[in-house]
Image (cartoon, rainbow, N blue to C red; front, top):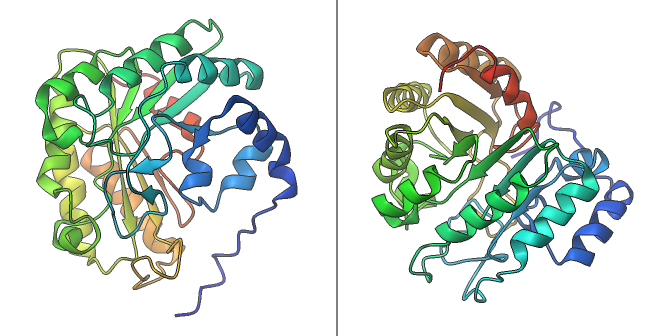
Length: 286
């Protein structure tokens, strides 16, 4: 299947050099690099990155993701401090942290999210922190633990429609991801909840609308919708390249259902231009 003309973004490795030197020097991982994000040079050139804590190896093997699968190393207790140092050097006012799934850890990595958010909060110029979390195998107490981390936005992506889960997310469940979002929303703390979905995996329009309704039903505030692009030849294949006007259609549908802010376009990713969601926080209630 040939890519369409609207999918023409180029990766400029030269503009990434300065950010790579900083990240390598502090021994930090980013989802930008590990997930082979097509927006990497745009973001790195702006001095923006999404930090990936708890290593670069995932214990799951989702068919759409480029993050390595295997046996991760133990958590590095100095990592939160190094992320704080990176945020300080970059002067980031909006910080996003995420992690691979760490089913090998008794707490799934929840405590490291808390420690990292705490460290970043020590920087007075940081306005907002977003935590993009795994499902913690559905453990309610671990999800609640992260909900009290002082992160301003907590995100968990449903990624796709229920009918495709067995093919591309065999170690996760659609209902389980909805449960994560609902637990976060009912945690008793005023936080904004965010999720994301990819298009082009073989879903129907009706299935996407059903997902949007499910997300609003559990109180999700923010949404990202982007085109799935296979990160490697061995990944799940792209079934369709969705035209920009269809992304506009789903954005309008999502806003009409009650989302406070929606980013929907072919190159949108969960953390892409994440500070744009500040607009959705103005005057809105969590």
